[in-house]
Length: 205
Image 1 (cartoon, rainbow, N blue to C red):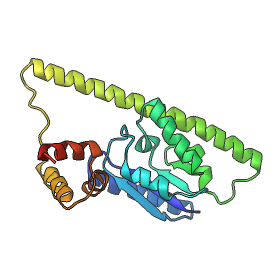
Image 2 (tube, one colour; image 1 turned 90 degrees about the vertical axis):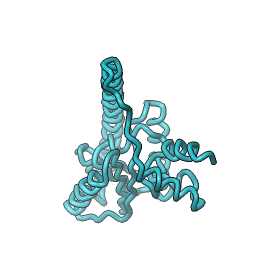
Image 3 (cartoon, rainbow, N blue to C red; image 1 turned 90 degrees about the horizontal axis):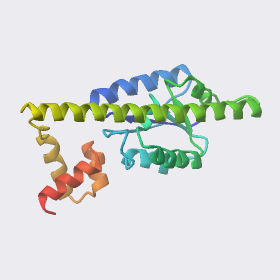
């Protein structure tokens, strides 16, 4: 069994380290070890995530896609989530999430009789879809509250905008000047391709 761990940290490296330890502990408790790890610092609402795409490219039928929770895998709109799930299914990947007990059956080398295995797979698929929908709704609600907060701050003359991450900008520019493409730069700088494109545009290249 080949276990591929996907770690998406939308804020800091500390988040990825905490998640990595949790995934390693979970795998060990099931007598397994993580064979390959894919880590990136991007929003789960972004469909174009280099490391996730690399995982899908590397995957083989029967591999386990291990995540801390479904919202680490997706906060995508319904249509984009269905495309991702279709790609995962087409590869024969089995999603296992620490917060989804029904998925833990996939960590076993033998899934029991065929009927039980198919029933568990169907239940797990339904619950994964439900949790992906909840993750998206949570994302939209947080964005809405954030927008309301910004509008209120603007009305009160308190809004100053988001501070520029000078270190990130410098790193992205260096990578682009070195000849890396947009996706390669995003992967090495731990940022989104959208951020890379904005910085590239500001360079006039």
